[in-house]
Image (tube, rainbow, N blue to C red; front, side):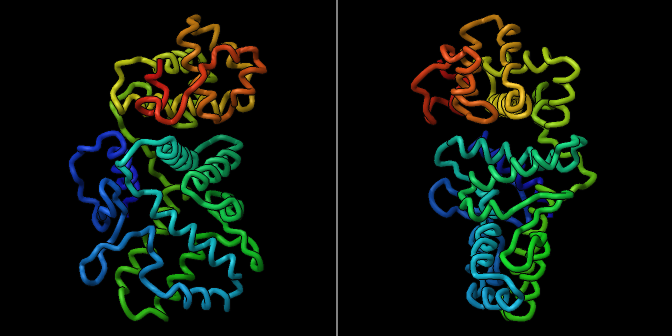
Length: 336
């Protein structure tokens, strides 16, 4: 299963609502309501079953009993169900509107995919940050995602009685239940398990694939963590110029997404630990109007640095008031 193609298709759909349909077999998109498409697979009758509602295919009560006998608590089962449901939700496409949530889901997913092959010495810190906030944007409860931990490119779930268990091991245990207990929809259930395992591999398991979204944008390389940090350490002016370019009013929607990701990278990987570096950017920009757009975007995104943090640097007056989630395309880049 090539989950990376599904992610690229979701990305394309976010930027281009009239894009051509693609063959993603064995996956399909089911229109749940107007302009809301759920990632799905076909059941034995050829009907589409949403992967975010995977638990509709079998008896969740019998699965809970099975897992309880193996030592999983009722809360464990509840949170595991939520987690595996969100793997489907991760790839759902909502063309009804564009929200911050959509940008962050795409961003955190891309960072996780990129970080699994990272050479950063503290990459697990970054992986766990990205995972935690991805789960938050996917609507998971804090009690649920606080039980997740990435170590050695593996996502672990902290059970109440059994300690840390790899999530992939839990999925394999659920497949054993399907094999023993479920008489119908064998092919669909096997497909669901393969999807869940492949999704976990996509966001965390190290592999030989160098994932790229391959937009026609000369600054795309700066959205990937290792390349961003390498460019910044070699010559920060390269990153500063890319940030300046991010506010070009004639960008395509593809350029705009790259611009958003570069700005978030700068906030997270640089300003979070070294907020005073923002002063060097101000000196480089040397344009109060443009710098105001940049710091307003940083304050609005709230990643790495907040409005209060900007004020501590004596730059609070550059933050424009009254911005909200509906401030034009992708919020802020075009804001005046």
